[in-house]
Length: 435
Ligand code: SAM
Image (tube, rainbow, N blue to C red; front, side):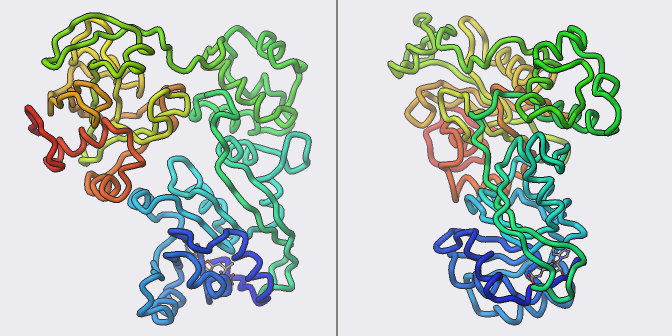
């Protein structure tokens, strides 16, 4: 269970302070143990949640904090707990003197997007912290550094000697702070492909990369030339930015990220949703003209719905959560055709057709769009288009209900209207809404 308990109150206090818990809506502590950190957190955030797996320590904590409305003890395994119901609470601050045996699994579970975590402070073995924070050229630099740093900034705050623990671990520990990386600091790239290439590149330290990676589109010499490195380059000699360039090359991206084209042409419609002309995206949005859009909810056989978080490159509602796929109709395009096209373009799924679920008239609540909500059924993998989508996840409808009710600001406007229409609540005047 990795139970090395902190016995130095001043270090405990210092670590607790690093998450800046005062008045935070929600702080989650992983592995509170006998409460060394908890003691310095209690009463500071609006809500403190403690997740402890040990079947003896958890009930003890429950007894100790019984009657405190601002503390909740969850007796569960922090590597397995479902994070999806947590989005409704808003940004989560995470802290823990982590059990070193499963520290890596805990990091992966809580820091792999999408996650409600907005910042984290962890104590771990110093050697692991070094790998998490290492930059190209450092001894500890490797696959773990890249896989984490593509989404997070990692900072080593302090080295902690074994003497402050009981029992004493054999190695030094360190405290790190993890904060989200601004997505605009990197070009877009396919995250699944990036992870695969990095793992391959670092799989055998002594081998040259050209013997570890699949055949590069355009050939290896063209790739190394574009990177400005030698043909015999090794994985650890390339920076995060260069690794992203490699992923983009395997995706066949040749141009810079364009974002959305203000020159795209849409049909403009009147109050009866009849086409009156065509104008560019830029003009339609600037003049708040009525136009058409389709939203699609993709449902799997377990009844879960795929939602995506919009990319930072979107001109409307960047980084907000949205339907499985959504988009404007091209000039002259029918709603049903746009649905099939958007599913393919945005999340890489092929369906022959979709079902009509609701028709929603244009208004402020739909950003001046006449929306058709359509449903599709799909169980296979989803492959997100990086310039459109930051991340995505399958959610239970009940979790989405609670999230929309608690934090409508996390969602694109059109989605909230579609969701309420589909769930049959919200009171908006719908011309036709049925499941
Ligand atoms: N926070 C305490 C402290 O600083 O003294 C305890 C830290 S100790 C290094 C790690 C704690 O994590 C232990 O209390 C252990 O029982 C708990 N733990 C181990 N595996 C866990 C898991 N998978 N999920 C939640 N807690 C776990």
